[in-house]
Each structure stands twice: as C-alpha cells, then as structure tokens.
Length: 214
Image (tube, rainbow, N blue to C red; front, side, top):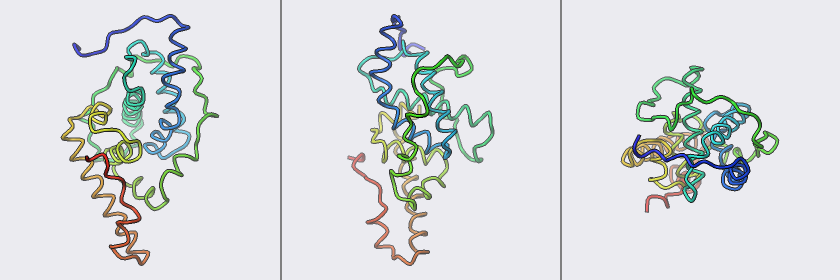
C-alpha cells in the first residue's frame, strides 16, 4: 500500500530502548481498553500481551512522534476482532466489514517475553473508571458501540484518531458515537426508573463528557 509506513531498521539496543520509552507507558490504558472489550481479566491480559508482542515485531514501522497510544489501540482492536472471529464468542449483529487489519495477524507468531508481564497490570483500574450502573450498561452495548464510547469518552481520543484506530470514516465515527450514547442513555434511564429516580436526575448522574464534540 502506498501510504503504509516504511520500515526503519534499528539495532536491537535502540529498538528495545525506544520500545520501552514510547510504548510501555501505554500499558495501563491498553489493559483498561482490553478489559472493556473482553469483559474478562484473563482474556484482557492475553490480549494485551499479544498486542505488545505484535507491536514489538512491527516496531520498525512505528513512526517516531506519532500517537503511540492510538497505534497500540489499533493493534489491540484488530487482535480482538481476529480472536473473537476465530472463537465465535461474539454475539451476532456485530458488523466488522468496515474494519481492515493494520497487518496480517496470521503472519505473526509469539516471540519471547518483552516485559509486559501480567503482574504489572492494574486489573482493578478498569472497574474503577466508572460506576457500576454505567459499567453494566456500557458492557451490555454491542461491541462496536461500546468501543466508540470507550475510545472517546473514557480514553479521550479525537474523532480523527478514532477513525484511524477503527479504520472507518470520521462520519461513521460521529454517527456511531451518537447512536452509542443514545443507547447508553436509554439503558441508564430505564435503570434509574427501576430504582425510583426521575428522568431529570439521571442526566446529571450518568451523562458522559461531551467535550470532544467541540
């Protein structure tokens, strides 16, 4: 592909130094993302480890000065899609047709330890990001809608960054996020009503940040 990044040959020492400095600081948010996608600690740990293994193998293609977090999130998202396709664990009606792999996962083999041990994971942090009711409602969304809420409202990606992570047009990002927020609001309103709260109260307590719309 003409717009694919060119490979920059690095010595092992330089590769390890840059990898540690540029990609390892993203470990915690990457785990949070993996946990929100898989809803399982073991699967999240496996997905993060697989992501770092692939990132290490393809690190010569990473362009210095670009968004390392977005690059890793894209790899993780593609790994998640491929893994769940093979295992057939994902519910029906999830459309991945718009999403293409950043690389061919079938060409990637696990390669040794790279320092992303599961003991470093902050497993509780993903659960503590948002309240139980919001988390439950978020987790019940189809994965495509859950993903855009995570990327935008929890991780703070711009629309442009989200489009690159998901390999979809910005217009699709906007419409999917709008629908996802409406689904989430509807689920939270129903929960609030079941708990005896009025509709006026729920907006103040559960509305996710809209700053990215500016």
